[in-house]
Length: 305
Ligand code: 13P
Ligand code: SF4
Image (cartoon, rainbow, N blue to C red):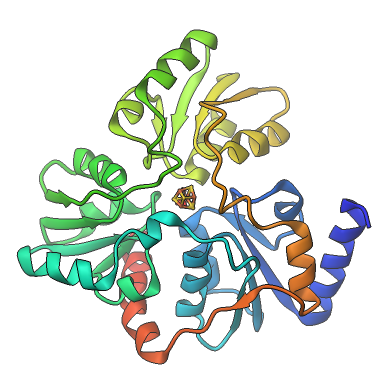
């Protein structure tokens, strides 16, 4: 079967089963072309609480499928490829953060959505890269323990200077590996390009950027801008999607190393096999975890909307 025939077959099976395909913007082009909805983590979370279908297939990473299950426990939710995890989400666990909480009893725990369902059970509020600053401003409390991403946390702290933000040493191994010198080199190679980066990058990178935002924020900025050239400092797929969407503009990945192997793990064939009942993992979470973890996600949607 070629790619085109497989896409048609996926669409046919999806209709037959009344399934909904959700895809993060980092996944492969041949999947995003046929997904029911493509977006950043915040948009996917909101969508997850709204879709009418009984069966939902997440083409993204595990914490995203868990978020769908937490928001719609009555649905059958599949992670299209079970090996697609997010290393950052595994960096801190409930036992560790419970101990840290004891050291900072008067701080609210603000958890990046890139955390496990278990860890979300002890968070006060969840955030995504697109909603973190807005939510930090909206919170009535002024002491925040931000987990696990110290780079997103530092970005939030800078935008909300009247609050105290405590950071821990976690982060995205893909984005955090980009050095400030990469921006200098990319600007030298493309002097007319604007630099758009994700807040998971280190401050030495974000401080040199023309725009810092989530994957959807970066895409919207590039589409609406009158500029013609852009250096894209997030997963390499975003530069590719933008190049399709805006063929008259030029998009240069900030470095060729900005590749998330977990987001690349899911293929169109995986999706096809999930719909044939041969692959994928059904997300199972116990009722107590769902009830506890849901509180911080509901608060994110309430304050971030
Ligand atoms: P977004 O919130 O921009 O979707 O980011 C998710 C992610 O995993 C980035 O690495
Ligand atoms: Fe996790 Fe980083 Fe991959 Fe996003 S890019 S899924 S934060 S490892």
